Length: 396
Image (cartoon, rainbow, N blue to C red; front, side, top):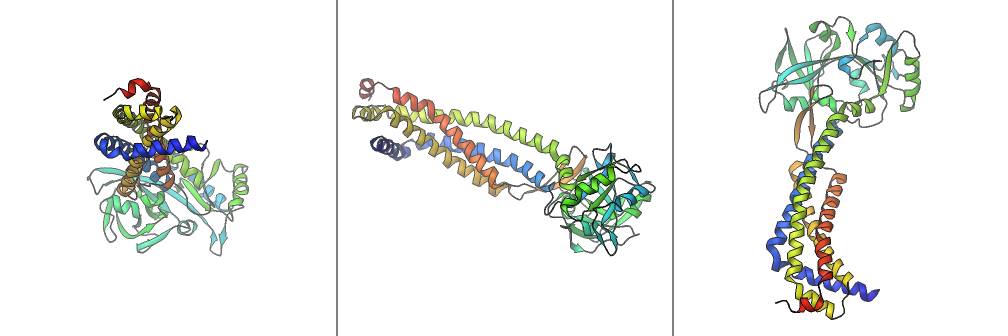
């Protein structure tokens, strides 16, 4: 066993020392694998970033109540009386000012993008006073909060970054109304940062919504109080609503786009991996062909076939890991934190987010590179081990 391992180490070290003699083909194979990894990480970092933007940070103690037949806020509708009954339900957190619930209105407006000037759908949300308190990651980062009853808005950091005219102090015209931007807020990097907020009581008449809402956000007394809250609503004959945890709601709203991006990313990476695989095969076949006589000599000296196979595989794996590491590092510095905005097909609204190159994504890319390297070295390794010793010694 020790002799077998020492043979593998000896042949592998010899192979690695000869890499400078084949630097052209070796460089091409490593660059090919680096390109695969960079594209793989780059595309999937979009999905990771979008998923992060649609994820709740902190305890999952906020519930969203919609009409029972609705699959999004856009298709939901609730009356003021229904909103009051929801606020009075058991399980809702309360303060001296009353229950921590916010009946909200959700409409779409068109604003030009800063980058292209083309119009895009931007979520315009009417909220009640408690909305700012029940979202634990909400923070005013510039200016101030809007005053109830006035045509004032606060904008999410992502929306302010992506769309023109949303700087604090500016005014935007939406429909027949003019709205003053009085503040900007952060929401922990979540979907709320892509929205514009104002007083629901002001937004309702501006969009001819009467006294209706589309959803009610409720902060629960604890995450465990959700089931009590949900059962109280679904068993109330005066209500036809459904309650979902905020985290589950946001995950469902982002599932279509993240799945599409992930599938596209894997498909593109697979196509590129095929090209990189042929590059690795060519490199390793060339390496075996250039060392036919040396391999035959080693076999004649008593080295077994398996040490030869493993040595070629280890060389191919080393090249793949080098290329994969370079590609992963390049993708991290190029894409991590890159700000972008895209349309969420399930709500048809723009969502601002940042690309996220996560450790899990980098590890997956390195594993992908290792698989390419192992497959690329397997067949050349088998060929090297099957070389007839006598024929190999006659090679010049």
